[in-house]
Length: 199
Image (tube, rainbow, N blue to C red):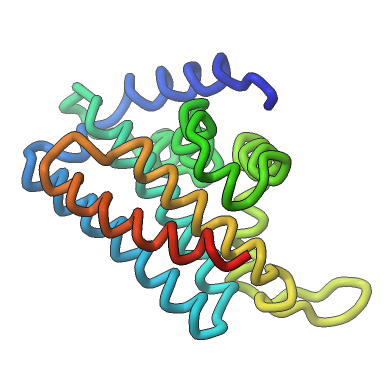
């Protein structure tokens, strides 16, 4: 895998030096984690129902929210910053932050989607490519071949892989900080097993 550790550290530094803390108590942290698990659960429900493009959008949103909560917890500033200047409000920056080097260190994601594909999606996230998938998952577009709908632009396999990646990012970034996050981690582990078995 490309070693993007230096880029990831630089992104973390930039995101922690500006803006207010996101979760100011255990209760707020737990509530934010519950929100992310709801996104993951909803993505699973939509994927099951055949609305795979919308499922991909929610999976990518869960990746973004994971970064916001994880990095936002370590901020110390009390001074608000404009959204346009805050890395935690930029889609591609949140993808970089959530998909740090440790996400790929475990074995279950590689076993579920293959090491090559895992590397490809991680690199895509680091390069801003998930932003394109996110947009394609929501909006119709016109290209040389005609109208492109979200369900034709984002495959079922890609949606499944993004859901598994989002679960792994959540587990890597947030599970274990509180007892509630451990309970939520058990729920997302069950989701992971469900979709890992559907190759």
